[in-house]
Image (tube, rainbow, N blue to C red):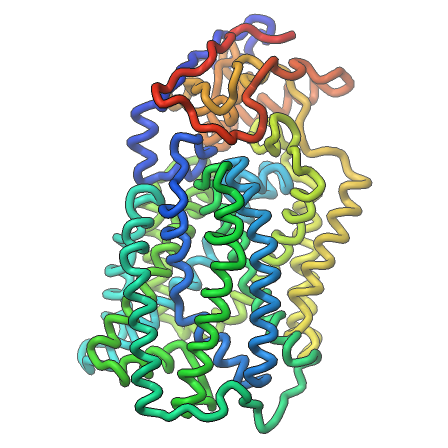
Length: 568
């Protein structure tokens, strides 16, 4: 290919097909379309996706959070806050999971529309970092339980063992492994916790734990129940997780996944049931002074012995499959955008595990909680902006999709400025306003991000670049037609393909290659500048499959014949 700019009046015909590229399918076994839109043929069945996502239902974090809140504000206030969190998280993630299933996009790809080509790189970076920090916490529970029970080896060795026992389980993708592993272990998780409760009742007869109130109520700057709810806002990262997992859902299953998989049913188990168990174990075991992740793990091991070790490992390993998966896919996207190179997800997983281990070796508690609080401000800001954008742009920019392709979005979008301003404001409130900031920084960040984004939409120009040739206008169905990328030689669905004006004949280029190519980026910006002041070429295709892919491709892979001619 030559590097001279193409004559757009004579584009090369698209190289189209109507079945999945075998090479792409082979890669997807581990890659899971980490930097591409997920085609309908790679969507998961109902139960499969449910079991994959329910890896997140098991974590000491939920038990410890509820127990800590009960010690601080009392059991009743804690349960009210939890139920509010179940309602809010359930409603928002119903919405996000449906949107993810309809678009098939990752957090990184969706963010390109709202934050721009460069501005969007912060989203996968924040998500990867947050997932790694959670992996640090959950992995530490395994290591400390093994170290305390055996009394041998240095804790650093147990850190390594906990990571090495978890990471291999995250290598397989959502459809090939995570669903089966987590589905098989889910009944064992709940069975283990039920046995722990029975043993705790026998060892520590329960009394008054449901009505427990602290002897001294600290000054929290808000009613106890409201403070408890605000604490759960710090886990808004679940909204971003939902996007990355929800993209594997079939559009026809959106209602089911919105209620059961990602919605209120999940959070009822995740927050309420786990929370009740955590409160019960801490209060009846007379450990109300200082509940910690390791303390609850130690309690389980103390009650069950070696079987308790199994419960702890099972609990933490399940949730860490999700943490490492999210960390690796988003590290892959971050590296691709920052360094314009592609690394396999397995390599990204290795990097994530190494970073996790190095953090474990430090005085992690001295700074990780602060780091999580800062990242939480960025997560809450992202959720506020993205929620507002989706509500106002339900039908997308065209074809029912947001314009996520790297060659058709501005370098910096107004959303990026709003995100930085709202998040940094939240951090300033957190750091410099004492108790008020500790309690109110998250809700203030959330509200500020919504208000500022609404203002930005009124005064700023659209971040969608006006360009010419578009492969979507040249095919009959953007979801079933595959188009070959001239750079990687792989074929992806037309919904993500673009024309590359940096190559002779403006051949097709996929979203991943386009996002990593500097020459492509320079060429599309030049083309967009040249198109200013003119009407948008291309119009709309005759039938591109719409933007709501609610039907499966035919079993034999056939599709209507696509045209390769440009619609002028």
